Image (cartoon, rainbow, N blue to C red; front, side, top):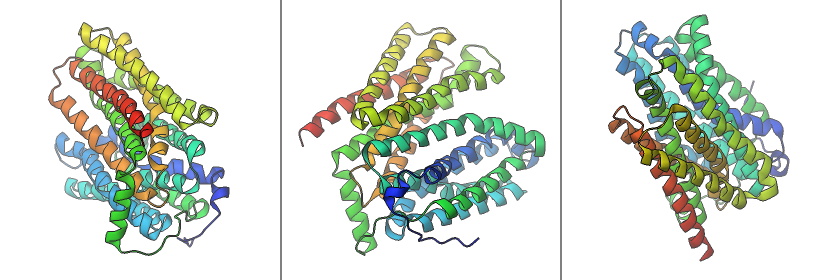
Amino acid sequence: MEISVNRKIPTAELANNGWFIYTLCLLISISALAIDVSLPAIPLVAEALGAGIESAQLTISIYLAGFACGQIPVGLLADRFGRRPVIVLGLLLFTGAALIGALSMDIRLLLLARFIQGLGGSVGPVLSRAMVRDVTTGNLAAKHMSLMVTALGVATLLGPIIGSGLILLGGWRSTYFFSVFSGVIILLLVAVFVPETRRQTAKVSALSQLKSSFNAFFSSRQSLLGLALVALPFGGYMTIVTQWSSVVVDVYKLPPIAFGPIFALAAVAYTVGAMLSKKHVSRYGVAQMLKISIYVFTAATLFLLVILFLGHVSLPVLWMAITVYLLGIGLILPNATAWALDPLPQAAGFGASIVGTAQIAFSSLLSSIAAAFYTQTIMSMTVLLTVAGALTVVVYVFGQRLMRQQ
């Protein structure tokens, strides 16, 4: 199949085109699947390639490094040359690197392939969000963003299950062949259902483009507020992801196999939050949905503050607090993302890349702090979740005041 990288369809049609939106949902989920499907294979990778478990675990962090490094260049290139050519290039890198990883006989080659795969996979979150902003704005944009967050939540839940099943069928290499398969399928869907959406602008130098995009984003109080309301809660989410298994095993003395179901039951709330946002944003609007999500997040933060004061609680009580926290995150993220990109019609790619980079940077910071101060208690996780929650609420309140002063 020949892939045309400049096919155009009127944006009014795309805003309500189901195949277009569902393809973007798959595109934004491609990295989550590449990471989560490979998680169960880590011990087998170490054994098969004669590497230590620490080296095998680097297959995750090195992917994330490539993923982080790719986002801002992807956004700038897509604003300059168009969304489709950058998506096609990214998916080809992702798929080719996954194939090299699946065939690797050496851990160093596998790690190099994972870094390149992460670079290619960075097109997913940046350009799916940017293309939604290209074709619509306001409540409908937030509705589509909610669907994408739902897709990410489902991918996170299903990834380890798919990975475990693939290992039983074909060993650790099958988890990397899965990325090859998903890359090819999404590339074909993009070829058929995703036209070029970038707005035509006057040609300027690359430096002028960078300066203009930078000024557009960082001079907008709304974009900065949206960025903070994405990065801060997601930092809390990644703290839960990295600490929850240790807390379940070390503090509550449950077997490691219990982590998956307990986390999945809580993580469902994240998906439910996104689904509720999708259902109600057309009725209440983005601003009101953000306010509602902050109320939920405030309740979760106060719940965690009580737990922090008590010092230790039963697992069901902690699980309830985490569940409410994740519900709030699922409500906040799609609306905050739409809020951040709304003022950037000419620089949506750059804006989406800045939001994604800040999201990764803050989540990496919080999860690293949580790991460094972990003492086989619930304290480090609870403290950081409370701080992230409190900062989110404070930033929202003061951000609203600053915006009213404009």
